[in-house]
Amino acid sequence: MSAARDIDLTLAALADPHRRRAIELLGERPRRAGELAEALGLAAPAMSRHLRVLKQGGLVAESHPASDARVRVYALRHEAMDELKRWLEAAEAMWSAQLAAFKAHVERDPE
Image 1 (tube, rainbow, N blue to C red):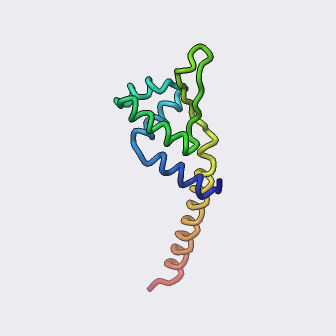
Image 2: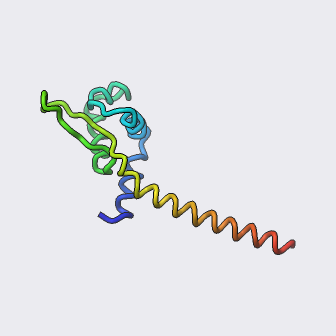
Image 3: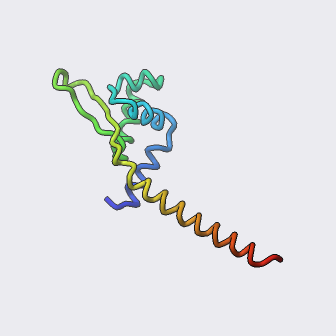
């Protein structure tokens, strides 16, 4: 997958407030799908749809405990944000350079 596509999927996954809250909760520790649904006040099918988007965006990984294969446990994939962070850093550097150039121009030309 291309870097641009990865960023698009990440941003699309983070566009929903329920998914962002799920990411925050998973940042604390892995959780069962039902636990996430309860914490977010969502029905199981809605939570399943949100988790599918997060998985497609590469933000979470799903596992099944050996004791019960029906249970799904989700964990945050920290490396999934790396490409987005690089893109944001490049965008910030570009804007900083543009603003510095504008400032220099304004200070150079008093009119």
